[in-house]
Image 1 (cartoon, rainbow, N blue to C red):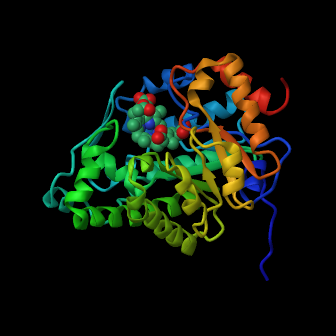
Image 2: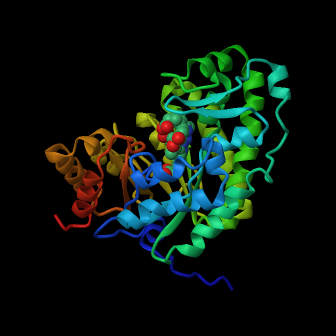
Length: 348
Ligand code: CP3
């Protein structure tokens, strides 16, 4: 007989569909440069990847925002680009400038990649998850993550961040068969990576499709929806009860297609989505996460207060996880994060 156990914390209860009077809250990119204690430990590692692959430093960075703000969930400190790194691509981070990869421009570049993820290289991330889970109280959930295949592929092809990921879009139009092979590789790698994170201590996972919004709607099925469906199917064969959060940024009305995917527990909404539209257009059992504008948080004051109120009102009565609509910005004052949390928790 299958015995159902109640999820141990508010975040997981909400992912399971519970409606809370006060929503659980965490923030995308909640660890990182806006925190002085992060900048301090970051300076002790030669490169950003060294930092990500140090269980000691990554554990500390994951716990810092929990200690300071008491969020309802921690997200393991890592990056979406550890997947290309563990597929054998050269990945680095220029300080202040973002990621630099050796771009994939040809079949030869693609063939030089491994044909599956080097899980040994990612062992430090799994160790970090175990350490973090062991030091968190039951009330705080632990989230693992990966980038969606389209978003990760867009960095693998351009070799860097670009305003509109044009290099990957051009590549996919010019060379759809090869691009499909890259996406297929990333589907398997991402699923394997998520399964291992869940086994190591993650209680839920989020799939970041930060660049889905640059695709024409007609391309979304092939490069975003189908890969997500395949990842979820594979993850569910190994870890059937793990809640999965999809964050397809910038897809507008196509959110209904993401919401309809079997096995998605929650949808992360970007800043452009109106809460009342989402509440009406997306199935009522589905948990919605979001979606304060990170710039409203950075600005503070009345704009922040009004933005928070609109979100609390717009999602009231349905399962909702309070979050930003994209990652917190490094310039964000800590006092604004404190103001946000006390407003959400009702201690204005
Ligand atoms: O706190 C957390 O959310 C966990 C850690 C986390 C990082 N990156 C740490 C990081 C997470 C979840 C990510 C996800 C990520 N990484 C995404 C998807 C989310 C999004 O913001 O759209 C993307 C596209 C990346 C790729 C990436 N990594 C870029 C474009 C950059 C440079 C720009 C930037 O924000 O700095 C990074 C570097 C990075 N990843 C930093 C951190 C803390 C800064 C590097 C440093 O501290 O030296």
